Image (cartoon, rainbow, N blue to C red):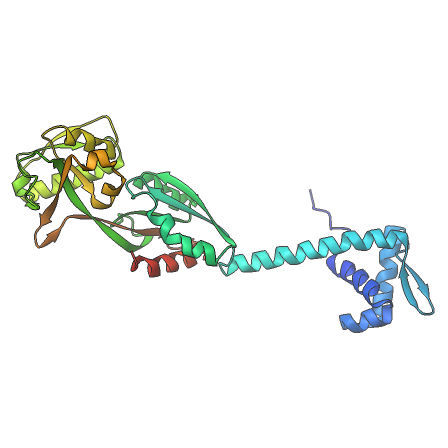
Length: 308
């Protein structure tokens, strides 16, 4: 079915508004940059279609009729909304307003990304954020599906079609009871940890730590002894505090442990060659379809990363 043409166009509404403002068709035509005869004809045809007179013509100019007053009120509202619609859309195309959907991987330390974005939210009040927690694989799929604009997750990324920038890295530390034989070591190598039992949490962080542990131990010539617990990675620390096992954890997570747990654990740095093992985090987005507002946020985050 063919769509019907709107009975009014914006030019007609603008003409009515200018005639009412100027008080005459001649002055309105001058303001609009057109001919008086053309404007007069346009008004006459509009009144014929509406079946009502909008202005009374007098020797001194034009004056709105009661019907014209009501028409002008609604026409002005429509013109203002149209102008606002145009401006919002134009600003969206430049990334100056809109909603940016951000996906967060479960292993991210709580509050890190929102702290980085807080200055941007204050300086760009027309940009709002929608948040979503998901696993790494689900975030990658959400980027491809277009359900999120950008994601913050561990790097590197497996998909060449997804662009990324690094933000920060968190050291991986070994957490154990203060009574553990290695508690006073300060630093240990992966080889020195080969005889320990590692507790693994039942979440994505636990899976990533298990993958890292297995890779590092095999590089050192050992197969790690692990035991998965049916709790999240942060809760596993309490189990290590009460026993002889070891838990791996990103060091920034230590701040979220209650003081009663921190008093009973020792934190030992794990040496990886000449440096330390770590999780690298960054932003990821789909190279071809990332909207303008999200690209501006990414540039801001890239600048902010140096401050964290």
